[in-house]
Image (tube, rainbow, N blue to C red):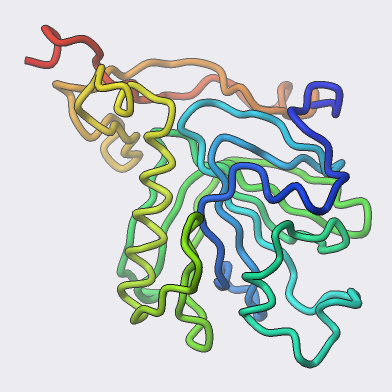
Length: 246
């Protein structure tokens, strides 16, 4: 998407992080080093550093590289409190990953052969080099807590919330799942079920209160992607209305 359709500019470091809901430090998959992580609601930062509104109920996780070639982070005294004090993430901080979860995408604590972790499914964008040009595809991600940084900051609070590893995983999942209800029928009271696409079952988590639909994703892909893939996929939409939910 072009920056002309963005809701705000990346300039102005004192404006805060648009849509910020939570921040912390997490590990992404098999990556060796942890990342500074920002959870946003309904706002996506594109490769040009501009912010765009996305589909209602979308949770956006940005993974910023720790200790990049950045004067601020190179200070030996830079701590988690300094990270918390940053009203806005500096534009000089490069990202490595971005996960965009739609309202019906999976976010859960999962235990499997790789251990207990935060399991999410969504649009995965990777960034390489100074240009941070992303290449996106849908997929799953295993996100782990970093034992030295077992805390989360929720917007609107003044300090880090210190938790155990298992509590931290649940807190991140709860924050993501809450974002997935924002500006949706759940928030307005027009539906009663948070619907999720369950790939292993080939359907929704509720056949009674969720409608299975097939539609094209509203996110940017290259022309080559369109040639090689079918843009349509199954989505789960809540049944709305009082009578329908009886």
